Image (cartoon, rainbow, N blue to C red; front, side, top):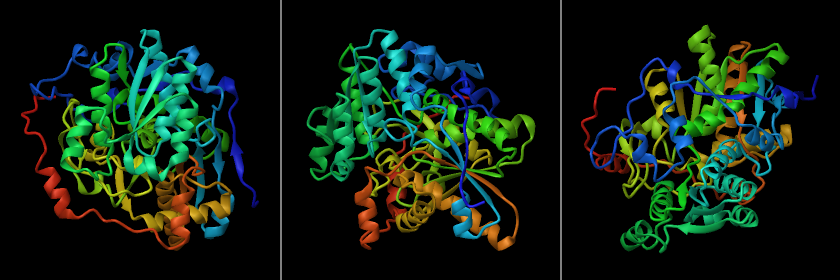
Length: 457
């Protein structure tokens, strides 16, 4: 059989709850600390940034949180998403491995990001919020929140990392088409942006800088809240609908993955697929490996440290314990803009520290080589972020080919690359550069980590 097999769920099979992994973690999650006092934050500390419903989700002891019907109604525009057996890719590689991918690129904006954007917009609307600010790298998150804002009648301002703003104009146009205002970051609109530009007028920007600007714009306006596309617990929890669907689809396939793979920048799409399968390993003893894939240019788990750090560059966000390259880290302008973040989600970091999650990093050129191989076999052009997962999946399949073993591989194809063709153009022309972030630059950035005496968790 050379054609692909699609495992589809009916709308009635869509999961009715998100999964919160925190109660099931083998180690307690270190507390979030106030940047000024070093003490654990409470709901009141977060109230200027988030609606109370999301703050409560951030700290809930419950393993499952019901998905509100208005959110499910929007989800039905594209969910459930397909699980696809990549038989054509298997044949092209000559591997005995069975390769599956969960395809999130069927959403209206072409990525997994609306899974949390819709939820966040809904909860903000319920509490009377009129305006949201956020940051975006490649523009997938900004596009998702712009769409969600249009659906729930909330104004959206997006601070887009400047290098991506210029690399990916069609993402900006998409956001503006949904009614969002898009500002290249660093900008002159905020004190944080002006501070960065004063020190480096040619700054390419970073997600950390854009977060600083978005947070400042939120806390200085009582009618505005801040919305985050990754890292925090409630964001990753909203994404677990991906893995919950995939579990049902593997039951239809009468199969189960030996390895689960996702690209990792802040951690949301990796966690969205992996966390429900990690639950099955922790609670039911399923022997599955979990592989988070990051760029060599921004290798937080493979070359960073596990420590308390700020979520932004200027220092306006709480301190979280995570794998980090240091909040002053400014990565090179690689095309996988959604992976250009200095830290990894605290839950993903804690699971990596506990040895449950493995991490690997790749350069741009082998990533795009894998993406082209996938495109020519499967007919879908992956986003540069997702292409990192494709690279790792192909390497797993080739390893199975060498050893002759059966191996079931699952990865998250978290978005399409239709707006990223300039990156493919550079790769096909032989102009794409590989960046290994210098170890001395990482060491320098880590020197600026906050000094905290963390309370016992």
